[in-house]
Image 1 (cartoon, rainbow, N blue to C red):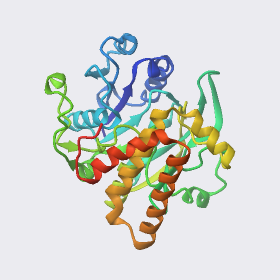
Image 2 (image 1 turned 60 degrees about the vertical axis):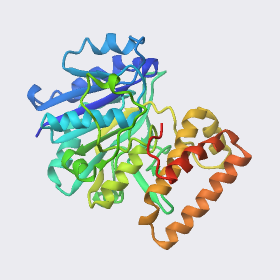
Image 3 (image 1 turned 45 degrees about the horizontal axis):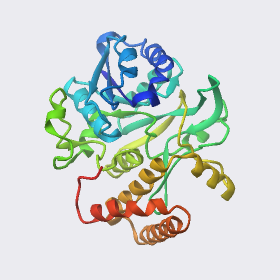
Length: 344
């Protein structure tokens, strides 16, 4: 078994986490021999931003890729996944640098995939990390992605308090998930290869900017039309449709300082949670949810199609009345509906 680990950095947004994240990652990989794993980072930072570089270059075992500007979550990971496959890796760990992990986390994730060949991915138990206070909490960030009628994806358990032990094995079986959250998840690379899509070149990315990198196209594992947000939902759904299972590994524990958390129930908490998110995050999420509707519409049964239509109408009315800045996202949605793929 050979493991590849990939993560993405973004200017100051992630530089502040690296002094905690990198030692945590190193400790979690210590059970493996050096020849049994590789670590890759794709730096989506600007060329003149050296915060990430100074820290990352101190770690000689990290392979570093950078184009000098933000090309998005999906593009960056496609580059790293293709590099991992070329290096002969069996598993690929997606991990955010705004996380820290318990020492046994990666070992337990690998054991779960090793023991069940039907699984295409496994998810850790992700709890909230209060980075500002340097405090691990018992609040659940994600137990994995679940799918509700009408192509509604959500993080299982998000916002509720965790129990240290499941009472019995049946409780563990109750945690049925579609796939891991984009914050952290282990994938079987042979499964990713089976669901990979072939897409045309994105002409907005100039060839001269890619001279030092392996080419991610035409094969895409994460769909690059999802520049950021919900690309993990799309990939999890494609793996599910291809017959690959996924499950939670409760004893693989990772802590995450989530910047776009979902609030607890209730209209007041919902609105407060939305206002805490930047307009850019809300716009990407809004746009990409419509991409999911378009992409997977034909696969839905009659009832699900009705629910999707109702959700589209609700989102339109919501944006029209409460968040008019989202209306411009329909331009990108309409371009997508017409088959144009060069969406940024």
